[in-house]
Length: 385
Image 1: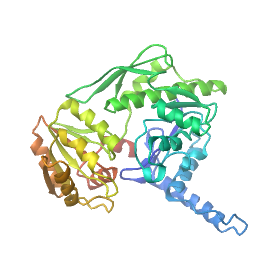
Image 2: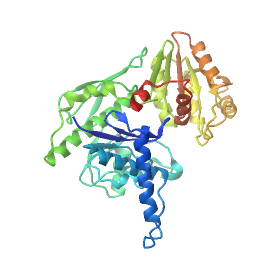
Image 3: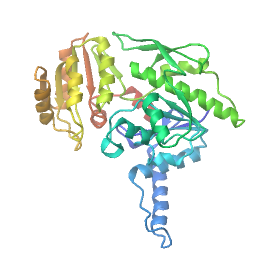
Image 4: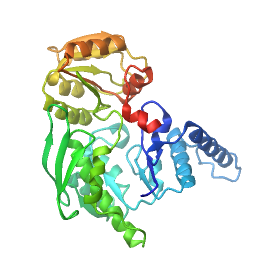
């Protein structure tokens, strides 16, 4: 019953994917208009001779964040779900004063910017919390240590303690993911069926439910209309749209599109795909700045053949170079290199009607697949309208 804004990053194909109001992305025209106004404001500040000379023009991400805030304000949204771009402490999104903050599972990513250890990365992440306000955490040990070190005294709610996951299951045939969430935060157990497949998504769902409960408390404290109890809305987890997150594009053979692009993401994907077996045809692309070794080692045990498309994106590792890495790291794996359409056709052909194909390794690669029209995401189509 609320008007909800959502801000995420990165996008797959169109920049406007990052900003949604209700169920739909903003229009390209609305985003263009907002960015023009942000640019005008930035030019005014930078051209002011009395302004602090240390002021810098906004980065592209900062400009997009400002445009999102402008669009949310004009749409008079009630609540914004705001995803941090990178880290947290110094991120443009952290200018807000959040009622509820959620830190999901932390992995080794963006280490050149955030720090080499999980502890250092966690210090950047937990800085989105606010003293006295609810902070939902998926990894209590590393997160709470980081909170102590930065002096954050938040009202901590823990996945696995305040809300536990039991009876988790993934169907080997359809990858359908189900489970039960139980704990003092929700009263009665919640039986959930997720639209987003994978045991890791059950953990994310638990964090989301804890965040929902915390938001309800914050609304009540401010004398605002309360939310329905979780048992009345948990069904919505079965209709969550998120493009290229274990998205099933076809069923015979099963074709899965997933933007996993770092070791933790690929490990979660492999755990999911393993429920169906170890005879996957893997269509793989990776960015040049990503170390392919852990990704290849994770995918190799479930992969019959790696198909490496010659995508044209300047940030992507050349297919032949990726083939050399696979031959070095997993010499037992079969490898094929070719044009995108030929790779996809061969992967589907090799899979047979009852087999399985996964397209993965890079969100940039996913964006190129969708932009070419060779793959279509029903979820993204619904977003864009």
